[in-house]
Image (cartoon, rainbow, N blue to C red):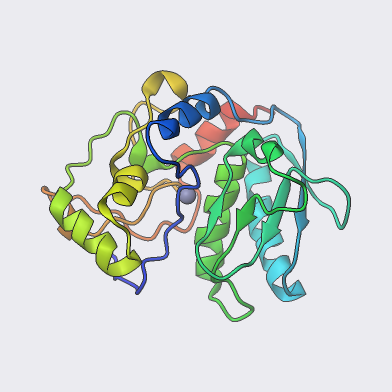
Length: 229
Ligand SMILES: [Zn+2]
């Protein structure tokens, strides 16, 4: 069972908007937010120490082993992905949605990475956020569902660890994506880098997900179908 850090450092869904706008927003973005095979994806750091930037870059590039995407880190000029390191949450826009944001503003944020953060944590968070940048969504909100949540415990847990109120939990945890709006594998993959850690205490049947720190076999296969070589 995963240990529980305070606060739980999971990626926050950036599509927070009051309902019902939220649903419409999602529908638009889920149609196809991937960049296309071979796309030159420019990434620019808006700030941050060189040591941190170097670590982020090294991990992010791992996606290129499995996806035909030409990720290029640029020093200036326009970039599809703009990375900030502002205290708070970690999050990223999903795929092409980053184009709708002004160039001066971040499309991705790492809220807690420092030069002394463990490499394991870089692996976990950077792979996850760059997964969003390539168009991936949260695996625990897979349309096939299949996670038997103990809802009250989940509400209590995220209130305690992250200060989230129930609507925020609904958005980030329970709300599943509609199957016809996304491309996906047939069922949720517990080993996916896009999966939140799930303590067994939060599910009715003891289902649990650890702190995934690498791309799962399914992640690798799936991203290849989105960005074929
Ligand atoms: Zn995320």
